[in-house]
Image (cartoon, rainbow, N blue to C red; front, side):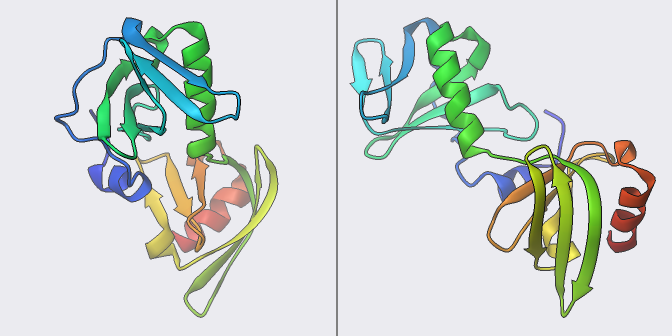
Length: 178
């Protein structure tokens, strides 16, 4: 697994234990009950208080999906999301997308530093956003030489997938503060 474990730890407080048992995807069904609560049936047992997380949210977003319950902790790990039945995969993907909401920055309109805080105005795939970071050293983390993650003071995350794909003005603003 390539990547920086430090970044994984910063952006994923719900890591699975390496000792979590592997789950047979043919025995796993992930669904929502009539009230919208996430549930899982694994083999002949149904779990009512279910959370699913990514063990490696930055490097392997569709692999090593952890199934957790509030009462029992880890139930196990699904090695590959694609191995689930269509409905379970859809529900799991929706839940993971909601849990790991990560707007991708397409353009940086302005970055201003003031008293140790960084004020950003950006265009993302979800529209224009303004946010405040504690400071560049505290809130900008390079995943690799092209990809970076930015965390605001409220814990929201933003991604620049490829710094080189940004327009020249955006790159200039970013390089001024990083």
